Amino acid sequence: MYYEDYDNAGFQDRNGDDVYSKPVRAGKRTYFFDVKATKGNDYYLTITESKRRVERDGRYVYDKHKIFLYKEDFDKFADGLQEVVNYIRERCPTTQEQAPGERAESQEPAPNSFSDVDFETL
Image 1 (tube, rainbow, N blue to C red):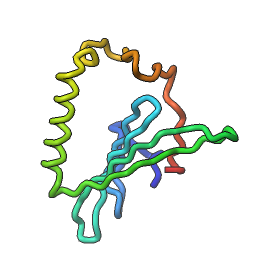
Image 2: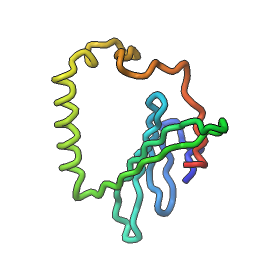
Image 3: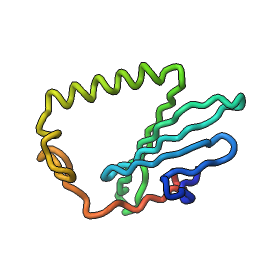
Image 4: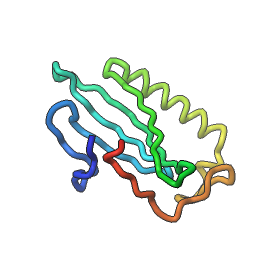
């Protein structure tokens, strides 16, 4: 899958299996929300977390984790996600009170810039 041809809206329409993609960069991680089509032209969503790390020999590698979400599960997934986000926000109000771009002490320090991601290796 290649991500170098995104238009200004942050996605690319593609023929075949890949329909729509939205990358979201978040610090050292990038999340990819990919809409795909089955042979019967039914859509489903894949969510991929990609995190760059350095090997002992200095090479960069990407750890990837992917889930598949089918449209019959969208509502239950969205409800569950919203419930746990609300739970966290209610119990950790300091994260809500921070200024944009400010990080809590327990989090990793803010990077100076985005990491270069070689999308062809994803």
